Length: 260
Image (cartoon, rainbow, N blue to C red; front, top):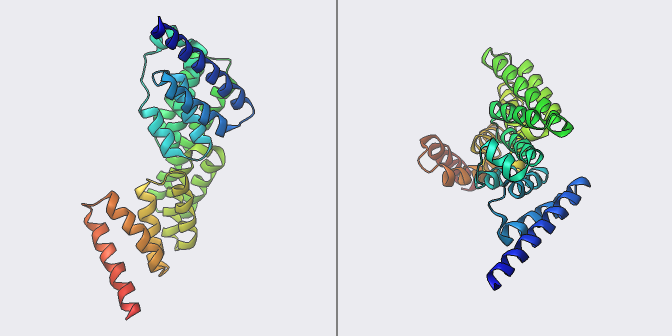
């Protein structure tokens, strides 16, 4: 009997926390959404997709993209039929909408478009889902256009294309910023490239490609200490990468020669 009472108490607690999340979400109080969703997980709601989606969305809005991705990766995945049966159509559409935004942030743009479209089909009246779908398509199109222009060595035009994507999709920023940084680097605008890489790393600290690009641009700018810091992180993340080992050794040698 005590066990049943404890389960009922936990269920009521989770229900109350989800209600608080919903209220906080309406006023875009993402810190409260994060705190309440994490508390709901602690109360035993770690298998509830809606709770994990609330947590991931809050992390995304707080510019903690890598953590948002990890939160959803750890969440159970239900099929459409069983999810709508257990949690309802609207709740499942919300989970898909958040997953699409997390996919966008991680640069999985094709998956983002498909997932957002599925959310729209489940909940055709959702303006939020429709907005995410439009944004995902715009960002995917911008990246593809930028990539095509980059391959054609039309770096200034590619830079503008990635910029258009950035204007249309906040969650896709890390990948587009890193790609635009590559254009800046090709055009010799290493300062701007560093800025874009720093912007990408601010939301995705584990984005090795952006860190590698920033380190290389700082070498071009002869900012040896800044470059060293990035290569020291990279050698921890990519210990077998020969290019990183070589670049780190070169920067260390440069700093040592300046001190002597």
